[in-house]
Image (cartoon, rainbow, N blue to C red; front, side):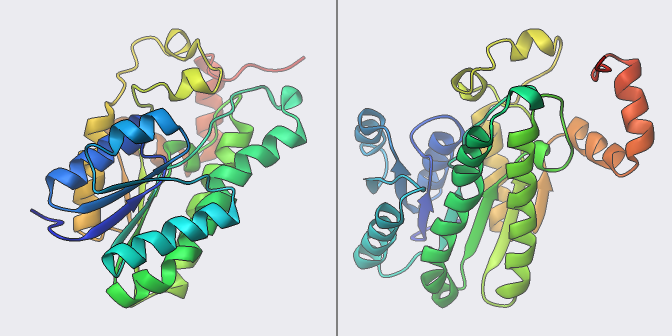
Length: 255
């Protein structure tokens, strides 16, 4: 029981990766506080975890109430998992500034808001902040400008956070590849699987198990899957990578 009696707060815990994380931490003995916006799903996950609470990470008040309630009930927070996120997959010319701001409001600012609210307790417990980022935070993808920007920013913020809280809180960044959830459908990218024939999607449970292992080891960063690691390594030499993308049709010339 790697997380026996530890208090774990998870945002976006009502479906997909977040729900799998809530179940996995519970199996490992943690007291799980599940945060989310969907009331019906919160009621369902509330039957499986210690506490389920409404929390929109874009709301100062809701974040404050959720963190205060967790600390009041359990006395501390040992692990904060920032999983709440939204996607947007549009051509750059079809992406409005309002849409970009909305994605950043959740994936970057909302994550930072929740983390800063929990940090005093995490510092006391010598805890961990776990960031569910993405391989899209390691490299760029066509039609992903808003989403890639938010995940790159999330990773950069996390690296700087690690410097600020060194010796007090560990920051664990997890970068999953594409996962078999409703994420792309919810973001309006209904042709994702058609556009990526033969791509083997990870399951949410696989991501959860890797995340628990990285969290237990207090690992700075874990990129999931050989393909994701290879693509990240290739992104360090962007010229050849861009040429390969054009040759394989992954990136099309405009005009």
